[in-house]
Length: 315
Ligand code: ING
Image 1: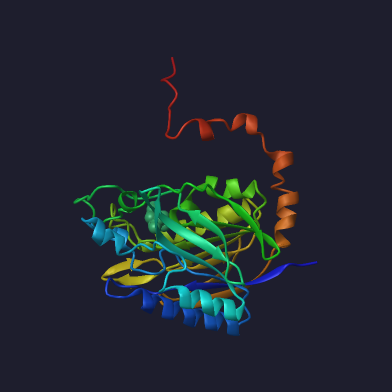
Image 2: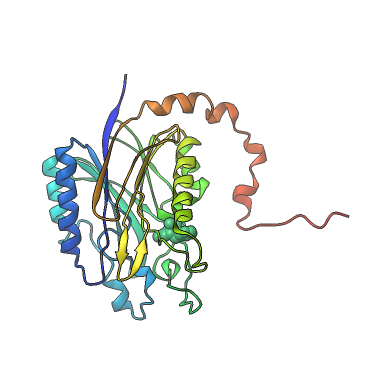
């Protein structure tokens, strides 16, 4: 028995400040058409796929910030994407900046939605791990102000039963934290979908080689996949946006932790893999049979404290 999902990773190349949402949507529909032609059932788009990676800029006024946010999803600009995906019967993951107004309160999240082949939103996720800093930092080569523009996600790490399997979502920096995958792994997740926008250089260590960034990306998603017996699909917004380079390396990883597809360019590029969800079962029933092997009586520190507490100096 096999439950094969043909997955398309729809990597986007650069979106500059001057690029409108219509440009982004047009390029995403072209990738969707290509995915349909290659028989994909599911397509994963990047994090913040509708605009340039704006957290690299120090935006001063709410009006400047809100230009990058969506108050509705689908919005008028993204409706054509939803319509075309429904016509093609293709499910998709889309990352975007969400502005929620509830009871007179405004909240801003770095969000993704999972849309099924009928065009219905079956799940929403809000990025939990926000990297970078909350105030303009003149010492950095460029800014990474996600802590200024977004609140930490408040939806946890849900897993949804859809498309004949168990699917979860996360976003970019989440993929570096083992807790992300393990919370979904404890819900039996079989495929984790994520988009990312990763600066190719380290704003605090410009001399860091950018292949190290690629190594850390692969390490994170391969470990997450293997240690939880799940597929991981990680898709970049890549390329040079207004002079700032974003990492490529969109990747599809099997439950064995092996990379089965990887992008080769920094442009719009579709990677495709046939992912058999039944490949998860062996790992979930042997080496990572959590019920048989985990010893939670020893894991308390993981949720009892946030930062490091070092033991007192030995007597
Ligand atoms: N970007 C980066 C990421 O986690 C980063 C930020 C890069 C943090 C490298 C630490 C090291 O891939 C986003 N958008 O989270």
